[in-house]
Length: 281
Length: 311
Image (cartoon, rainbow over all chains, first blue to last red):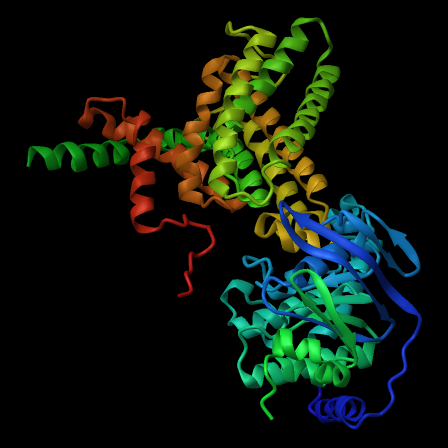
């Protein structure tokens, strides 16, 4: 990425998010209605409803075991909810397979990084574009004509996103050898490589130091600004959540405790009692 | 001094005496090695694409050869029998995915390995129940004559085997490295969850991998079956593939080839020249000694991924 781009993006992110410029959103992208799922006697999610508008950043917070990851797993098809429905882009899905979710533009990252550790960074990222490459494998083996053109186009797009998240230097490195913070970033790049409409981030900043967290925040905001990607993220760091999200959903023991803007959540007595504890001011 | 003479001077003097004969021994070894490589390839494929050491690969070779011979005995012409056998191998890939891999998704690799041991027995038993257990002759029309070139004796069958293996390897390498399907296969081998999240359908991938492994097993079965007859001992050539894999590295297709060639040459050369020092028959165990040495000093094999542990 050219050096000049960094401050510009940082300023833009700062503009919209800290100077309280009114952010506008599109139609409802994701509508979650009365989702319930239980594992044996444990009710992981109990009739959860919320919706996400196009272009929004929604944070799901809650103590450990509140059902946050289960919620993401329902959205991208890892879990099939036992009750309720999820509509995405206006059409309801009762049962969505993971590859259908991916085909329809839902990409995600994981709490405990799920990368292909033996493959290079670039190969990892290219898997994110696998679904879009339609040429028959016989063509690809011959590496001629349309298949070659296709591969090159997708490589170019992957490079663009690599530039955007500033990981040019580690393109060829096997991902297993990278430090933790970089692996998290590669995982984000792979998710972005699919050019998703909806990006699900499960604790994108877990285990990072302060500086890495700041970088990651900036990348998330940049992605949202530049590509207009709608983002649903799970995060424990309250200052991060309050800074970057447009809306917050609070879960506790599988139930929805509250929903609102960061300011509303900060002031919500239920949340303070159940989750944030006694206010320290 | 006598020992030195036996192990060093006599064999080396023999080699120096008749270089043409030595060349013949080496070439014989290389060509046997190609046959080992063919079997080892099947293992590497499944290991690369699912991270599982498929214990049943040898039994698959036997099963494929038995099926082909069985069909030909029922007066089905060769091309038709080949297609039918391949169709059966693909059908088995579907069955393995449905009843073996799908219920075991996200399990430890050792559990999948145990499952393939079970699969081994199913293939061995099933093949013999269906087609009988007596030794059968397989003739697919590959010419088996000898000719001389430059004073060295060549066998057309061995050369054909080498050619077929070369083509197979070339195609497989391109498939793995250059296609989205190949990339998807490598991705699935690495991490199931991550593969699912980028929209790679696990089931399709597994079916493709096991079908390709079935195809390689069929090729190996045809080559070994025509050479040695189709019989139960075919499933034991899988044991010969083990040292090949340890030498070459479990996840490397070129490794399977180089490992196979090395083992073939070492076996033949040591048998001919060093055999007398040990009282003969060292062909049977020298490969395993090599494997042991490699496990001690270079456990990832010649071409395997370097093992790095982050702490």
